[in-house]
Image 1 (cartoon, rainbow, N blue to C red):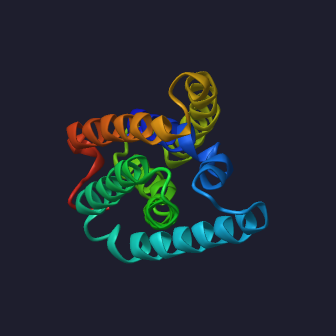
Image 2: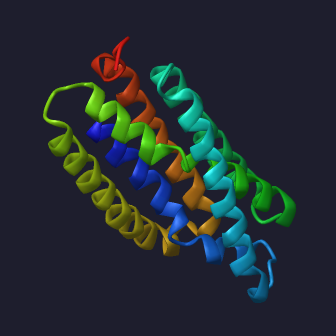
Amino acid sequence: MVSANALTFLGHFTVYTYVSLLFLTAGVGPTLIGPLLLLCGACGVAGLVYAAKALDHRPRRTTIITLAIVIGALLALGGGMPALIPVIAAAALWNGAFGAVPSIFQTCAVRTRAVSPELAGAWVNATANFGIAGGAAIGAGLLPVIGIGGLPWVSAALVGTGLAVALAARRAFPARP
């Protein structure tokens, strides 16, 4: 699960690092960037609430649904650029679903019982930090080449790879916690 976590965070932060530029390119005025980021954060809380209700009973299903929504929203974001309303709607959905991601990977990593809960948490945290830094670097390298409208497509591919790795990790979803 830690590999899937790293890939998912890589994907998310490839474009999220540049979300302000994404909004500006779609026509959002500079004074509305803060409120839009607040909206994305509120959507993330909604995603966390979903995970809190679903994760304990159906961890595999929750993981699949959440990452599929992230991927779909990233694809919609890439396809919607630079139209304002599709970009805002896709960003809200993407960030809403991503709000569940840290809890999902933390829970699944602990449930595998491959290592102690403390070590599992440390690995999840380390791979998330790798994904944050690596995603920002990937985005920085690609931004001048493919532009802001191309980053969501790369992000979707990385998160999709993370989903494939998670699906292959059958031990990450034991029937009992």
